[in-house]
Image 1 (cartoon, rainbow, N blue to C red):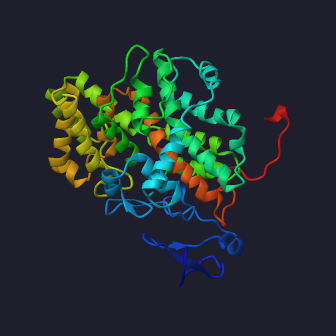
Image 2: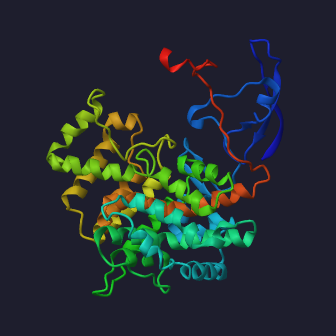
Length: 436
């Protein structure tokens, strides 16, 4: 944090003396008012449901400017990274702080790809789940269970131990996601191959069978790799804050990441692209493109309860910088697979056109976001809808583990302890049971 000579003076109308609060300036973004001594000097807390105006930490990893539609990883524009780098380069950047040179990239890629296998007994752990369980429920259990299989990973008091934990999580997450998928459809697990790229390896674990050789399609691999890059981190959102809060207790990194996965599962967070595809399928079932005007009318009717999923964003007020890249990727994939005339995808493109031209949506800035396009791409790749959030978790793991590392090495790190405004009963006696 950059100290400032400026102060914020907080005055009270209840007789409490005024106090001066330090102001800190970030490299970019809003200034912050340091209220750490507020309670000690005034006996008062701040009240900020959802932490919408509260900076819970200082960070050097990711910055979002919602008004400008800007997303930076370590200072690099997401557009530049998604165009010029692959996912493991992005992982190196988030974890280490700088982009790798050629030698560093080769060493990092080799290191990650030689940690992709998981303990063989995890197969037996997996088989304890029902086959019709939601993959996110299975994935949460598998990641939490890693602490039982990798005992050395729960001790992270040295930099080397933290490095090992970070590599293990990034490397093994694709294997766990693919295992959860294969288990759900009753197919045999496919072991990782070290000679493939990170994303190609994941696709072969997802879609290969022992019956025949899996053919790698570079266009599709690049599309999924770009999805991974665009979802790698997103500042202090709900799941990242969950990872930091869980990790602040000193718990092991596997448990902290499992907490993040559980939070991501929520439909208001990681389930948005799944909800978007479900919306498209419902429109298609009700008549498809010919009935889209009826659907749009319901969206505009405040009393209908119908919501337009995959459009607009809580943080980005003008446009989602990831959406443009994902749109290009979406069209590339549909063309490569010959799906431009598929009814569901034609419906999606019709809905996109309406949202970009209709004054109702334009004025409200309800533009197609990254969830809209990534859901379509994943559907085209053959990834089932209930696996979408698992893909999101796979990509976000590197952001979570980078944020975890930053938190526990921060000199100001301490266990998280939000406060409350208590509005329940004051102290009262317990009456005898006969008088209750």
